[in-house]
Length: 98
Image 1 (tube, rainbow, N blue to C red):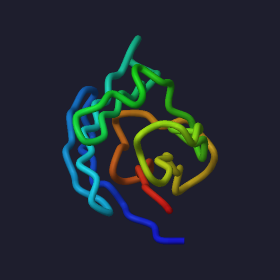
Image 2: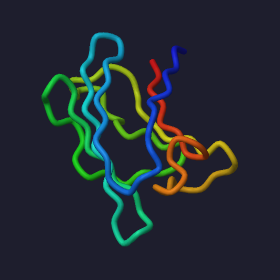
Image 3: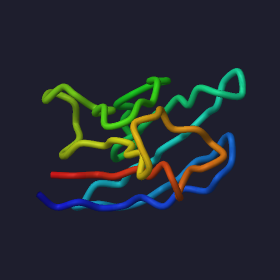
């Protein structure tokens, strides 16, 4: 399995653009109620996911008919907690795999 780490900053709200395997991804992260992280994803300009809750090791895209190859998921590098904005990029990392 090819695995790519998508760099994130430890801030509550952010937008990241990256290109992986010929796909232009736009990832938007929002924190609500200072705790829960939500993600929206566009692939080649097409909305794929809108305001999905982020959990540890849970695929953020889990249906094959969407116009995106691979899978995105968060990984808690120190346990099994849901990602929190204060430790994004360190404890909580975003990965793409195929």
